[in-house]
Length: 269
Length: 299
Image (cartoon, rainbow over all chains, first blue to last red; front, side):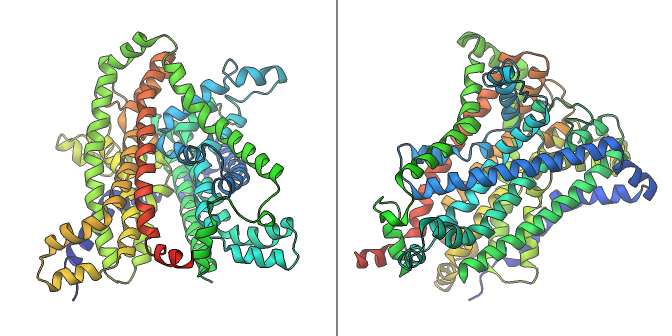
């Protein structure tokens, strides 16, 4: 027997999706279409804009890479080892999802400012974190931290112990089992986590804006440049930068979907 | 069978020695993991509360009881009170349509629902300025009809709905898909109406997944900063939410007050984490139920 309600729920789903998400998002390409190509190209190749793209993308890549390394260790430790406080640590991993970004932003700044708890320890060595690119990267590490851990955890849990046993009984050393058996199996999920952390960091605003100091050409991220242009009523300039970022986000979303279906196929096989 | 053997081995700590790392390496990895999390998670969390109470408890209470802070709290609660139920209704509708029926373009629809996650918060707010702002597509028409959305409360609510849009739907769709349609079909055969089937059969099956989505949706709705910052105009007492108020206080060098207000949001985050952990433990046994009898037979 066919269940009722398809037409009304589907109708509402499409209507709500269009009204809240699709139509508003369409304003970006629509607004850009009113610009001439030269104006658009001029807006996105402005040196200040290019510098912000480089910083947003570069710092996000570094932050995602650091999260990939430590996220793997954290996920491995949480699934495979038992130690006191493991469950509390496990719950705490989601903090960057739950903590509002503005709170994270002012807190990280307070910790890493030259007079902050950690900042004053680094100051004598000439390491400055707050209001530098290092600070931007640090905030992006915070915001992307849960993605790698949470995508890897279920895959490590599902690792088939018999395969490890087989490899070990065939004489493989532990190092070989890890590098030849376990890591290749984790690879798709690992990449997915990396891409998710990167995507989040590229668009991040709240947790980065306080610690960055917003020096044009130096520590100004693209989302902040958009806001600056909006506040100056330079809607065309803001739209052009935003469209490029939106296209990058779409590309990442499609990549992540492809990675996830690859991971699912790998797990099924 | 491998799955059941596996679940038996996992977690009891008696893994064969050659199937794990040497003791010194295990503890090194644990130390690295905890050190990393302590630096990036625990330290910021503690700092919020230490800074908030830096000038004593009465200064803390005073900062929170400022009329501007209370107005910001009211607006944050209002925005969440509209955004969460709206996205809840949407999530249930989308879950029903996607999990219980087959139609062309299903994967595309699921991807589109995830869109707000992929978009920078700044862009999420900006699109509403482009639509409803003074220079926006509907700006002139709205000025003629004396309507104001951007730099007013409706814009904040819209931006909040946008950024918290996917949470309920994406939690509910897999739970509904896993539950299947047989129970609903049985209820229909036995003569139950559509709504009766939903409330008596479907809802009990998805309630924890639903709650999980609502908690995450609420946390994002109350904590959103970037999107709301673009559409708000930051008029004190009128269009200021709690996260925006934190920023204003911070930029005016009123650090202790900023952290006091921020601590309210950090409390919200902690409550979210606790409820989330409890709900996850409720969700886990349901998933493990199917495997349990087989595991028992092996032991």
